[in-house]
Image (cartoon, rainbow, N blue to C red):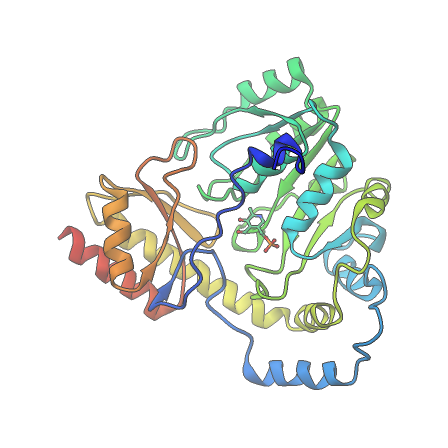
Length: 352
Ligand SMILES: Cc1ncc(COP(=O)(O)O)c(C=O)c1O
């Protein structure tokens, strides 16, 4: 393979996609437990039948950009669409990173950050930020001032810890950084905080969002970046043409007209997250972290054994013990009422 591939690819572990079989409770990928209502799916399918599938979609879907811009009170030129936000992360890195350039992130965080940094030959500047501890603001500031990373990748609410970066801190980071500050807000809809207002004040801030979580569209792949129009204009040159297919565009546009339904589902998920947290906090052996996302990180004395016990009952959670600093940690997302109850019952069986 050495003759064929670059060294950074050969040494990559690759993205370990978790199991996707449909068990009794699927709580391992932070998906929405709500599929779209059948009537809405039917309405979308009827519209899809009227489209010309033999033609390319209009590049960069201006209609979708306009709808998103109107929602967030931005200009359409401030939006870049992606085939999922993962694809946009790749666009960000391929547009900004020369080999050897420094990119700061705070592990444990979204696993694709380090994977793409390695793929594009960047040097990862890692400032650990452990669950349950304060943001290491001084360490992050020192790393930025002394090493001047080309890019800073934050995730807020952070996967897999569920904790957030403080808006005032990110504002200071934007001020001292000569590079771009990217905040992956894949779980923003489940939080009371957003960096959107800051976007209007800081030119080097970039926000990444997805329709995979709150909008129940993981299977259809739609994500978007929001940033200053001049910055977006550069990434438009890097992004693949026609990356948003006709069907994804149609579903995205439809859902933006059904925001009340999405909001109701988000509120349900937040209530379930809080219910799960309260239940888990009653079990002495477990230490569950409060979360601003749709999942909860927890530690236990015997992570692998508990994972196997849950799996044996058809309950899939995510084993995150391989993440930096997270030995014996698992992550569970808020699912349907039944799924959440099955999970808590299985925990009781195991520990009580
Ligand atoms: C922080 C974060 N960003 C992005 C994604 C992926 O989003 P998408 O489905 O839009 O590619 C995930 C998925 O789990 C995530 O946790």
